[in-house]
Image 1: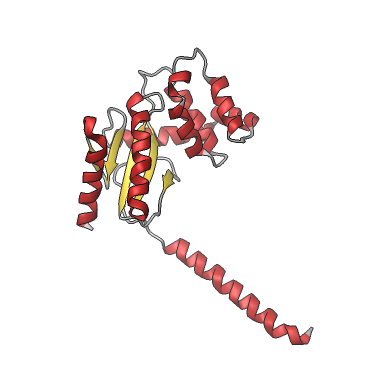
Image 2: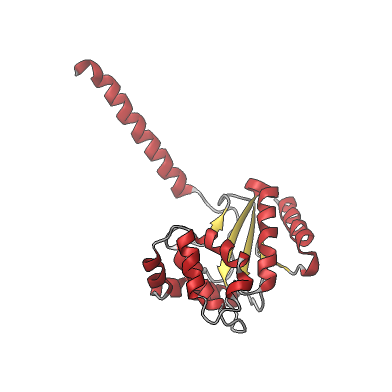
Length: 213
């Protein structure tokens, strides 16, 4: 046992060093882009490194057809810009859409089980199906099953306070930034009004933000 003691001590010291370094890294890591306006849901639904020099923040409505069109465009931008781009999605269900709020609740409930982005994609991909349904709950439950979620918990969370609070926080943030339609896209806190030429408009905004860095 004694002959192994030095190796055990070295192993313990090494493990402690790694843990300490990891904690320091997480504690001192700061976002490259500091958001303006109200905070919104915390933590936000985000993809990409927190230290990315460009932040694309979207306020979306899952029943909004243009939002469904923009979703794969943003996926493409993430692939194009890699570690230079971070993407955040904010809930902004519009009253004009009958099922937009329950869809937002479905996405947030999936998020509580670690599958927000997968539900985000499914909702947009199947938008034309559930948007016209009298009651889309069964469709959303089917999505939850497909994603391997605990469906009973999913249904309970959809009605829960935690989901309500997250949506309300994102809506307050949207109001603070004067979001009046969806999709509303901000690149480093500047709104990009893209119109029909969305892909190029987003690339131009990202390139301009990178040039400033």
